[in-house]
Image (cartoon, rainbow, N blue to C red; front, top):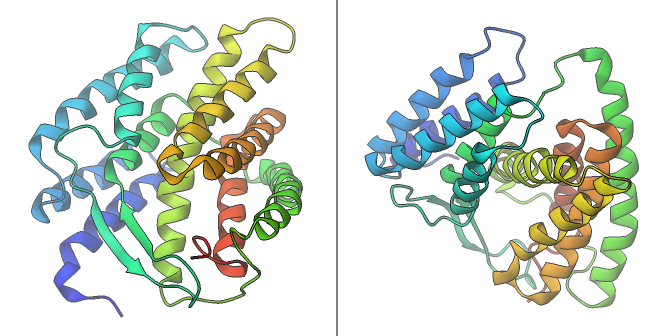
Length: 285
């Protein structure tokens, strides 16, 4: 049951998700802006966003718009996106007081406590990249190839990742349906998976592929983007860096093979969901 004292926060979260979803709707191109504007308003109302945060948002918006207009060229605007994007996913900018949705929650008796934040800065990065830089699949008939791609790469990753995790006692088989499942699904799909794949695959890997404009250059881009993705999880330890880098490699392959960001997003989410519902989450204590 939702706690009514967090009503502005839920609207903040809800309008952000609505902004993400509207990017794929076959309606007026900039409908997402309306939802994003209301998200900003409720962020201010709930004290999880400050006016000073508009500065990096404005720079990101201009850089993303110009990059989208320039098409395949690599420009100074790409460097701006890289710097602002890194700042947003690392939460270095003032003005973003990310909401702690779930704090030190024990999903299983033998699991580490789980804390989940609604990261509005990271969500903002994903929204602007998807709105201006990354092409989206709005064709229903293209969905079949994406689904097959997701099934393939999710299966490959799970068949390798979870046996390793159980062997080294990072996790064990633990099927469950926690009380926090709805919040987790909404946050992990529309905020975490969308934003991380938009930045690391849709932007970084894609741009590096254009920089490495030679034979097998796309694979160099894939490897570098995967390593950077793994290093993003450095605060969680070396083992997590290794597992995340390998996961990033599979997400990147999904994107490389399909050339659709949706494939990478859904592969990322499906792997996370299998972890959440079928294995110890986030890890064994």
